[in-house]
Amino acid sequence: DYRRGGYHAVRIGDAFKGGRYIVQSKLGWGHFSTVWLAWDTLMSQFVALKVQKSAQHYTEAALDEITILKQIAEGDPDGNKSVVKLLDHFKHSGPNGQHVCMVFENLGDNLLTLIKYTGYKGLPIHKVKELCFHILVGLDYLHRQLSIIHTDLKPENILLCSMIDPSKDLRKSGAPLILPDNKDVKGHVTFNGNVNKNQKKKIRRKAKEAAQGFAGKKAVESSLNAKSNADFPIDQLVGLASVNRSSNADAATASGKEHVGSKRGSGSRRRKTLESVDLKCKLVDFGNACWTYKQFTDNIQTRQYRCPEVILGSKYSTSADLWSFACICFELATGDMLFDPHSGDNFDRDEDHLALMMELLGTMPRKVRESTFNHFKVITLACSHFINMLCPFQIALGGRYSREFFNRHGDLRHIRRLRFWPLDKVLVEKYEFSEQDAKDLADFLIPILEFVPEKRPTAAQCLLHPWINAGPNSSKPRVPDVQSKVTDTGNSEKIKSVKERTEA
Ligand code: ADP
Ligand code: MG
Image 1 (cartoon, rainbow, N blue to C red):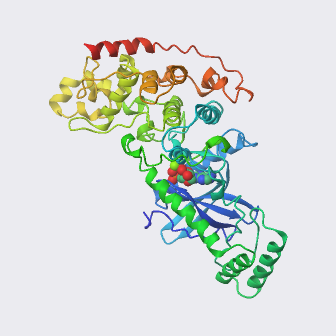
Image 2: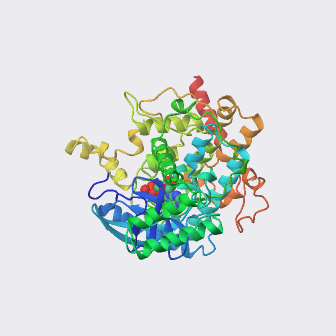
Image 3: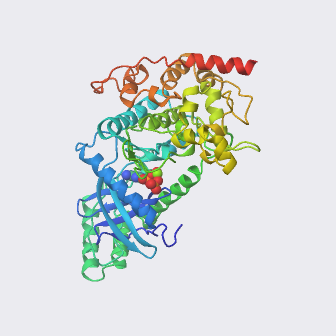
């Protein structure tokens, strides 16, 4: 991906925007970008610098992302709505083209890293509630105030506000800053954490000499020497940078999304209790976001977090994010993805996904299956004989629509024997939850995992649910002007019908 149109090769010490931002270490990456910890020399603070791939498609996506991020920042001047804040943006030219760059407040580890950290065993339930509270605050803000749908909610796109392991946090580690490897910035030394007075003096003197005599590479060396004089061995700094890089290599494997079976054991050592980790979090990555009234594509969401209406090719709205939220909540609590579909010999991944949903939640109501017929489909059906005569493949053209998956009895075409295993039972039997914990979590999640998108509770309504509301955040201000929702969505009926079918 490091070619024309792709990622920009960033090195530690690189300067951006005429020397204002100096790259310190790698924070993460996604399909669209690489993200770097940088020092903002103007504001004297750490920031996250997202450097987008350069092809036109990515540039356009980044410009849409910036429009959305500006709207988000305008509506949240105090930065307490659990959504990342955009601080600056600009373009950067490199050998692979021109890259849109976005500068954000610097946040901590993403939730996938946190899940890995627990050895994929799941977090204590009160920590799950805490995270869910903040995610819902973010979603409520986006949905209710801005009519924005995130459309790619997943653990990688939700970040803790701090690092799980503070020794990996350059902001707090006390390591001196890496100086730029060019002449734009003069021997500028700022300190990061608790460096004592004498150390500061020595480093400043060396850097001043460096800036006067031999700026550029020398300045870095000089600062490193100063550090070693001041009991900051060079390898500590180099080590810090490489620790960070290797943790990113880890993240790369992790986002390859291992299957449930393969991940057990790999991280069974729980290194440190999570009690000391501050679990405030914020939503990031608005690269795929849209408005309810202005959507860019039908093809949204990362597979495992995709809602049924999107698989069936129906219209979607803010409730699509709620489906992903429920999947994430389950994953935080158990360490496993709620749905991880795979294709088989005679069925595809979509059909497996629908089967997994129905095994957990019951049959899909007729309304959902049939509401996916769009106008094209209706016309196609009405004229089916005529069209079939002209073009036998025409009916299959609506490929992603429900008739591809369901026959007219409402059964899946290729996957017949569904084994119904309701959520509360899964939690007890597979994840060894107590009956009470399982019931409480299932009562919270089942209404959100409602097949009919309009029946799903909103983020604001979820915030009022006792599972969240009576939790550790109950002293926090509640969301105003929201009516509580009756949570029985008729799910027990659906469940019964599947059970009967399976038993029959
Ligand atoms: P993409 O659109 O390429 O997926 P993201 O915005 O999701 O890019 O960022 C990719 C990764 O970079 C995230 O999963 C996260 O680990 C890291 N990251 C993104 N923004 C920040 C930030 N503000 N602070 C710290 N790390 C970040
Ligand atoms: Mg991302």
